[in-house]
Image (tube, rainbow, N blue to C red; front, side, top):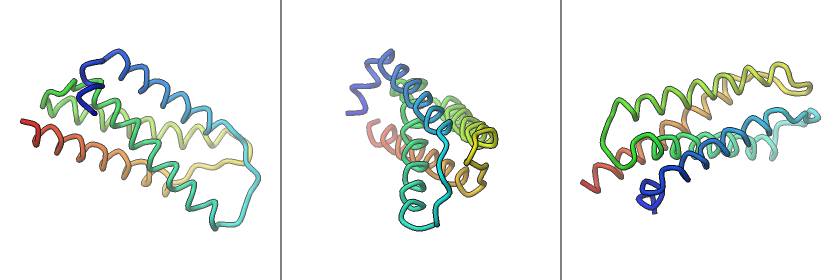
Length: 125
């Protein structure tokens, strides 16, 4: 299925930007404080998968199925920088805060996406 997106590069770029916009929109929402419990685990999953798919589609858009590891590193760097700016952005949203643990969750999603895509590229060749 990934090859389908690699061949439709413009669509991959559109999806990448849509994911980034959705992440920004959700980060702009104010939430009432809640006890750490069920909602905390859901937010952790949100952070992981949002940045997993952001990194994955950015990698697909940049690499287009080729094994160019500089571009893979660049995609990881761009995704991580977006994760940092996302957390900093939340400092200015009422009811939200900047969290190192959220950034580490974002980063783990980015790294898992990069490893998965790298393995896919190596396995395909």
